[in-house]
Amino acid sequence: MAMKAKRVSLLDIGLDSSFDAAMTFVQSTLQNINAEHQQPIVDIDFVRSRDPDTVLTAFTASCDVLHVMAHGDHSSTPTFASSDGRTKISLEALGEEAASRGRGISAHAILADGCKTGTGAWQKAVRDCLQDEVTYIGTSAQIGWHESGVFCSAFYGALFRNRGRGMTRAEQAQDAAERAIEAYTLLTDRNCPFRVLTLTPSRWARMALA
Image 1 (cartoon, rainbow, N blue to C red):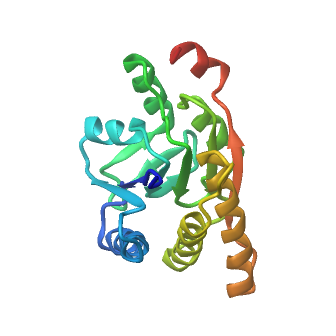
Image 2 (cartoon, rainbow, N blue to C red):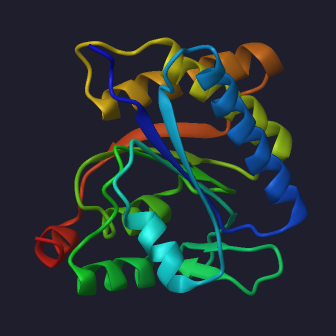
């Protein structure tokens, strides 16, 4: 019996040529993985939009990996932002809007591909948006296109190389992220800025999204 394809949602909020090039690289990586198989093993959903309703729908869509690419604003409120500053999606507003609709982030894994998205403030804010437990991949430092590209190619390569039989989809993402962190360090001879951990819905999210 053929294994059900994993669904990867690519959400580009960065909205400039550099983000477009980086996301195109990720899409090409996933398409190349599919090219090695008779049947696609990954379904790719790509959203690049300024429309708040469209963005919220993308955040809350069921998928195996929700890959968000944007600037990580780590000032007062954790926020995904575009390069020109016209598009800003704060996690506080996302959580409140999700609660009003009764549906939060329901991905098995979240890859927050932006600067300093792995800090404690981001983790706390993400937990207020969660429908269920997730594998969360964020960063501990400022990153650029090179850091993102090296990590993402290793992450998706590991995720689809090892099907992880006996593991949940979230556990497969955890394993792939850990392998990608090791590969990043080996390839660059530098500490990997990406971090992986398990996040559970906050008490507020459990009540609001019940």
